[in-house]
Image 1 (cartoon, protein in one colour):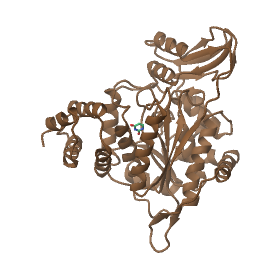
Image 2 (spheres, rainbow, N blue to C red):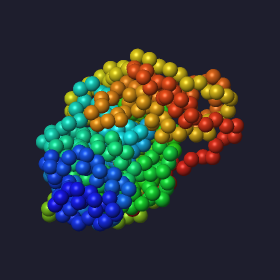
Image 3 (cartoon, protein in one colour):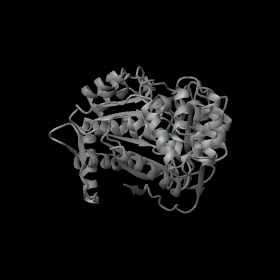
Image 4 (cartoon, rainbow, N blue to C red):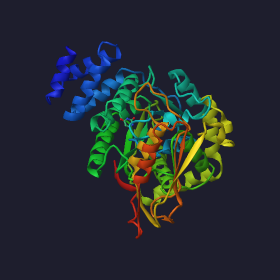
Length: 453
Ligand code: URA
């Protein structure tokens, strides 16, 4: 099948056959289809879309070109969480060890920064020695020993997503419902999961700017997950404003360590506990291991507020007792990282320079545009514009004020952390423009907008 004809068909809005998608994707993996052809195909798909059937084939072929983890001999429920991408979204780094402390096995395959959003893998690599390139065998062994792992796509697991993900980042083809759905679900379906909770972001800093688009994406992924035997629930959550106070790799790991030590961060802590509560509901109430073989079935239950509160309380208890932090240390050690970062976060890269951003007037912070902060943090070096670019793990932004907080003229709204000042002026301008200050308290923002089963 000629690659150029497949690209032309999608460019003209045609529907592809499964064989055409297969020929393109397998050809790309084998090096017969070039990066520039795949980039053209991605742009055509971005502009013309892939319908439901094409998206399912695309995902299925992405999964089948790699290996799948088989964790059926581990007698615990395996449940993961994945976000569609946000600014300051460090939830996975707290949730994985937290759920593992609750005896849920978490085999998390995560991604690097995409567009203006950060990536779990880049953040974890701020920890000296932390390996995110585990082989299939290492993943299995680590999961047997510690019950939790966070690693990247590899030549074995989701190899196509590894390459297409980088290409999408460099070609402005990220914000596409079928491409996001297939990217996320190809990783998740390779993990050998029983359950999955998806955090579908919507708002200024999300790839899905409107709740309608977010719902469409959520429904697509929930359908793919459930049809593949993985109990899948999606939460549509707010991404108008960055999550927490830190944006940038080492800075975000510091914030995660503080949360695991018991410090609460409004919004971020609530989201961690709520997503974790849904993961626990799946693991403890819905997954049923059949006695005679290693198959799994699901019990349909009503997820009440009382049930969610009980799960949140349990998770909070695991933070308060220090068990979740101990799991984090175990995870870091098992992946070759230096666990001393917990006591001494300065062992992670620290920027040589800081620059405070002052409030221009008295007032109340109305909003902080998450996309502006994300783009500023990429400009400071925390993210990449091209696949081969290295990132500066020390660079980023600390938000000293969040929305609804009062400021006086000259107070520090944020502090920029940087080593390279090439884009400093542009970053500073973006951060200034991202803060909107007014006189009246802004309306309260709803963190969880919708739950899709
Ligand atoms: N996360 C992913 O893994 N893929 C995307 O396309 C977006 C967010």
